[in-house]
Image 1 (cartoon, rainbow, N blue to C red):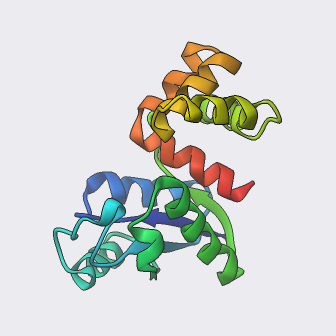
Image 2: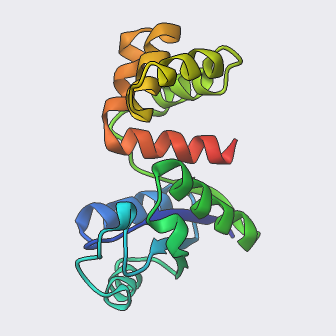
Length: 171
């Protein structure tokens, strides 16, 4: 038995989500555990459909179990969202692999992750924040300074940002 964890909002569930579940099964997953936001999704926006409707859609689309991501995590930043979801998967004690979508491949995400986890990142990041930029801008600028513009460009795409946070939380 091999269980794949997927974090989702399914707001709404669509063919791309079904494809992700199918690909997880092709990668060897025998079961799919979905950690899904409830009636409010990331950034505190109300979901388009009630969570029960989205759960039924997920189960019909191939998920085996759907658990709710608690509201404080579901409505938070990408970092907190990813941390909450992976914490639930870890607490379940049965998740063997995690699947998520991203605009770029694993290699590019890992390169950004290495920069974020490096000893050089924090001091430069703090300086950029002190200059008055937003969190996202300071982070991207720091990655650009430490690893180049091409690596920093990975942080301009929303699924990449979330994917990097999943990797960071797993780390």
